Image 1 (cartoon, rainbow, N blue to C red):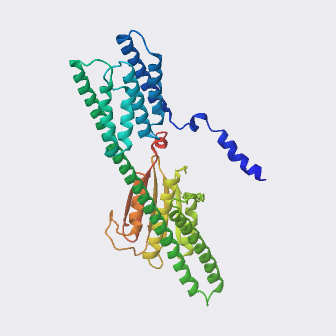
Image 2 (cartoon, rainbow, N blue to C red):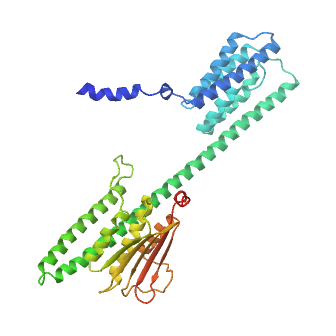
Image 3 (tube, rainbow, N blue to C red):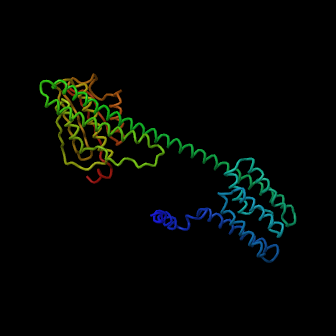
Length: 397
């Protein structure tokens, strides 16, 4: 069995493309080949103009100098030293002019990008004095060439420093986005936790009170309530455990839970739970049902769950509730109302200071919808959420 266990990783390793095993990227190869080609062209033209022939050894050194750039990411300082030594050999051997070649510019840029001033300042000085070793006779234009070389070196340094600053800003921005994403996810989990605890615990409390009241008069009703109470407790613990596993999974490689999120299909269950908790609740569906995205279904479920929980908390004894789900042409409307005493508040849209109302409003706004909460005409409280259809689905209707 042991050979079989080791055979699979070996097969996977052998199946990797050859390019993935190379110590450089395709861009590195393109930069190296491009720099070598430019240097070869410049060396050929210069040698043909000054000597009448092109030294093969010089072409070889130029080629090696350009290909040395393949290692510029892994060892930028050694790469610069190699390019500098090869360039010095060329300058001492043939009259190639008093300018910087492409390989030297790329190597210097690589050093500036990844090393501090203590390293790139000597590299800048070495690049600036390299043309002094040229075998070409000095003339009045030599000073202009040296000045141009100095300007080129300064431009390379400035470009490297600007890119370093831009990279730091990008990294900082990426870190802020990651922190914001984590904070948003934790707020979402907090809303989920609030909805789970508020709904299940409130229902369990009401059912426990009903079981206690019927314990002596009707033990069978009390027994059924306790069985349902046990199921609700088990469900609440399961859902809270899943959320806590998500919180613990930061940096963990364990697979996330694959349990489906509650949706519209679960509305019958929470309506039944509301009835069992002592508040008669009707469920009405209007329009042709359609398949909604998972996130929108979860929003509908949580809005109904939170609204029924508030109705049981504040509706008082003898209150009834009604849940109506309407599939309109361009939106889905969920309406929950009760005829109980209700929480204090004025009619119309209310801001809502509780976590439940805030959570509902944020969930609905996430899908571009609107939430209305307030007193119904006369007695009771009403929660209405309007969720527009996704654009691609709405366009087909």
